Image (cartoon, one colour):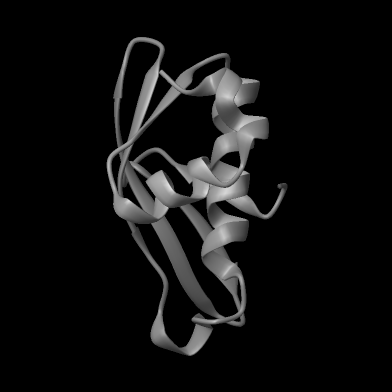
Length: 90
């Protein structure tokens, strides 16, 4: 997803929607990205923003050739219902 950016200075993926930013924080180690927390502003909830954010983050992780570890409940649930990302799960 081209609208999801990797803000490396803050260690988070970001998605700007209507002037608000949803984000997923992460920790990196060689070849691994651990998504530790996702947050969506209240005004954006219920609109699929968190799913778009995680989809974009996972696509970026795949593009760089890394694996993902779900460190927060939302990402655990997302990966459980999206088997198309099983190839990048560590």
